[in-house]
Image (cartoon, rainbow, N blue to C red; front, side, top):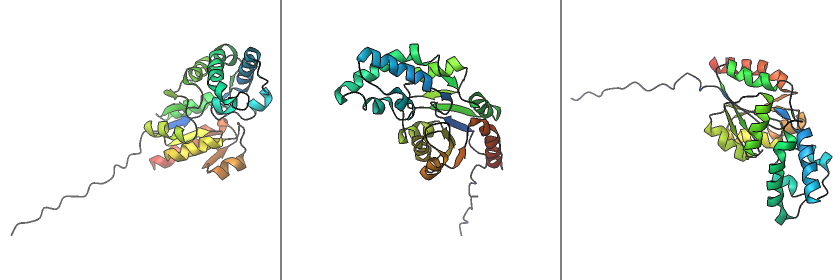
Amino acid sequence: MASTVQHPRPHPDPRPRPLTVGFDLDMTLIDSRPGIAAAYRALSARTGAAIDVDLVVSRIGPPLETELAHWFPADEVPAAADRYRELYPDHAIAPSTALPGAREAVAAVRALGGRAVVVTAKYEPNAKLHLAHLGIEPDAVIGSLWAEAKGEALREHGAQVYVGDHLGDVRGARAAGALSVAVTTGPCDATELRAAGADVVLEELTAFPAWLASFDAGRAA
């Protein structure tokens, strides 16, 4: 009578995936309001379009074309977007600053042996100019993605956490199956962010390193 060989069942690998944290850019890592305001003023001067710059900077987050549609006829939006992106390096980079805790947040990921990736709706070359100017050095920068589309890049890079300031960032984290960490440095308050599904809400990135250390300890356990 033939004997049946019993093979042990494979056990899942208990080791957690390498830590990868995604960050939004505008109003998460950088205060781009002064720079964006300057770029819109330059665009207004060159096109003659009347643009309420204060209103523009109060709702930073969605794609450029979404904002331009408020100020230009639909058929003029693509050309206006191209012109804005051309003007951006000369007007928007120097006035923009790092938000409190931004450099430390990226450094905290690195200190734990992790990777930091920036996933933003901003035109990627301009996003890289901001980061280089401010001395913030992520492992990767992916631009021109908004809301759920951010989830694609986050999944590709294996991000377990995505940090952002906007309801669209919460949607991106959820689309990726990542933990949504929200900061209230942008246009959305804590109540809005929690209602959208943020798992963690911090006032600003200065609180992020301590939170990340606790999160990573929990992963290891």
